[in-house]
Image (cartoon, rainbow, N blue to C red; front, side, top):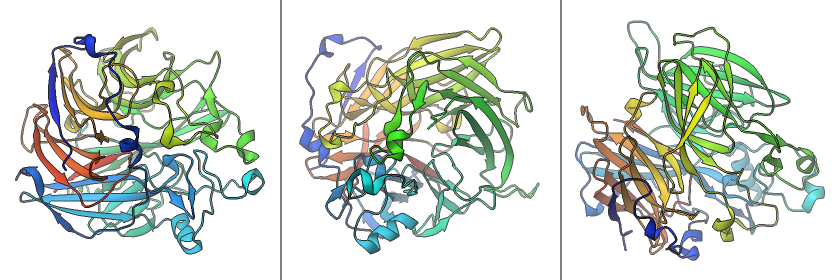
Length: 510
């Protein structure tokens, strides 16, 4: 049975509030059934549409990353973010699709496969067998390469933000090994799992990314790479184009950032880190993070080397309270930088004695989309709530990254207010407030939508949304293709694969 999808059109945010207090419309067993080990690696399996037709002009590859192994030797990870990374690819050509999936052959994955047991602790609380004594003072990081996947030149990069990326073959997904990007990175150097792609604000497109070295003072290394070959200049895709380092006061917990033509925008959450429980083997490093009482969040605006303020010092401006994992977009208006982000009231975490499969969503803060307008002249910040519906994984048309956008797409809860698993995809008109929702409830659960612009179109919302949906009725995954303008289903592909709830993905145009 294919995930049933319905489309709902709502005039503005806040309308239709009568349904806001409705009970959750999902079965926890359906949601939790996605947390499993993937036991197969498929090689170029042809997948046809169970409903609708694959667009003939959709040509390229959708890559997805996420944890594919969550249990070993009877021991489950404490948090799914500690699971071993697995890449799934769907290649579209001529109205057909081919499916592949492959685990990333990291050093840790290979060692544990050979041993048949857990050998490493996890950042989010997973422990080796033997309790605190067996885990104390074991500070080795297992690069699990499970967070994002992007194409850069002839490399497919599997990203995990605490260490170097792994290089994969873009076609076969075979692991080539750790990549230090032609000597750009030092062994073990942190490299963000959330790059941003400048569509060409200063000529050719670039991949903008960063690494963080944390401590009482934190250092951000901001890097920009070419993403296409330029025969005129001899620049090759993957070549480092700019590189700067800036130090800031305080501990930095940064997963994402935003870019404009002139700025890289970071939000330093007001987070404190007490490493003692980690050193003593009682908690994972991420479990030692907590909101800092009386702390002050900061915007760090770093001038891009390709922009008008190249070489200048960063701007540091007080930010609103709350916790941010992901940003939607940013842009500039005269002396103002506008950044749109998903805010939580507090840092969400899973305690040492909690089971992530039975977590109470009502006790976790929901993510809400907000817009901050940063006045560079006087340092003031004004904030506007853009959506009251719990959301995550928001994006704009990638061809308009860093520019004002009218439309945004995001994964959202089925209920209008309250925290639930993500079961719907929302298109939000940022000017009028109109919403269009495609829902997979009651038995479907969505992941991050990837917006693919229609080649050659000038319309901002013309294209498709590609979304992997966990189908609780089939205990397997579907790939849903939506019209990004109308949010109507174009095609649904029933995949012969169960993909656990994952993280990020990307599109590589043919």
